[in-house]
Image (cartoon, rainbow, N blue to C red; front, side, top):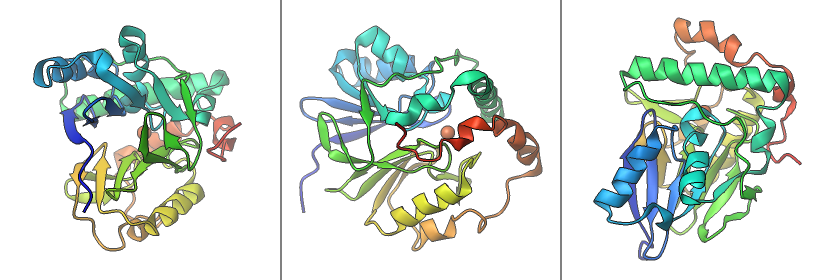
Length: 263
Ligand SMILES: [Fe+2]
C-alpha cells in the first residue's frame, strides 16, 4: 500500500465543503467555495495550519457556479494563487444570455444560503474565471500530477472532476451530491445525455473514496452508485425546485456548448 502523499483538510464553507490537500511542500485547494469563503480559508490556513496563504500553490475550479468559482479569483488577486479550471469555463456566461444566467445562478445560491440558514455574507463574484492553467480532459494538474482531470459535462458543459489514481479518490465537484443520506444529482442538469455519459464513464473506474462538495467525504460507496443516478432513474426534484428550474436553464445559446472541451 502506498503512503498517502498529503493530508486532506475539510473546511465548512458557506454552501459547500472545501477541501485542502496539504503536501509537505505545497497545498492544493479543491474549489474555494463562495467569495465569502476566502475568510474561512484564510483563518484555517493561517491559524490552524500556521501557514501563509501564499503557500497554497493552486486553486482548482470544477465549474463556474458561485459556490465553486466565487473565491478563486479573489484568492488570486489577494495572494497570487493561480487557478486551474476547465478550458471552456469562460464560455458558460458569455453574451447577454450568459450574463442573465450568471445572475440567476447567483440568486439561486442566495436561495440555498437562506434555506440552509447560513450567514448573510458577500457572494457576488466575477463572471469569468480566466484560468491561469486551462485544463483538458485526461491532463494532470500542474504541480500536482497525482490528480488527473476528467471532463464530466452534464451539470454544465464544462464541469470537471479530479481523480487521484494512487488513492482511487475522486473529487466530484457537482457531479453528484448527498443530502439527508440520499445520493442525488445536482440541480440543474442542463445536458442530461452528457450527464449520463459522464456517469457511465465513472462507473467503469475504480473509485473508493469520493470527496463531495455537497455531502462531505464518502468512503463507503454503494455498489452501482453511478448507474443508480442516471438521469431519469432517480426521483424528480420537489415541486418548489421544479418551479424555478426552467429559469435556471433559460438562456438557449449556452446549452449549445456541449463539448465540454471547448476551443
Ligand atoms: Fe454547480
